[in-house]
Length: 90
Image 1 (cartoon, one colour):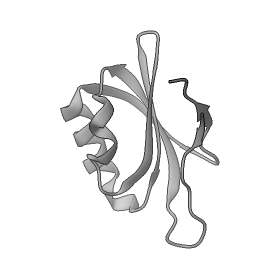
Image 2 (cartoon, rainbow, N blue to C red):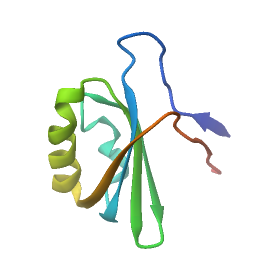
Image 3 (cartoon, helix red, strand yellow):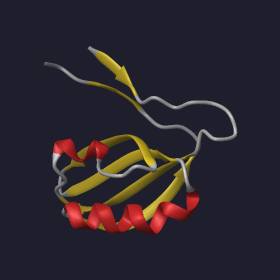
């Protein structure tokens, strides 16, 4: 089954970000941050990569605190043009 992260167009759509670090985040964390839509958590070896759309730029520090409270040590934050598409096998 192929899934893509929902990203809406328009002025209220938000900005795409990638958060990189280490640790583990529970799968149900997707709804943990109100201003962070379409959150995708990808463990890559010892690294944790989180993709998503930030709808309120003022909430970046709150998103960082929430990710850290969920178990991720955030090392870097980058703004990106597009979010990746991903495939899951069930």
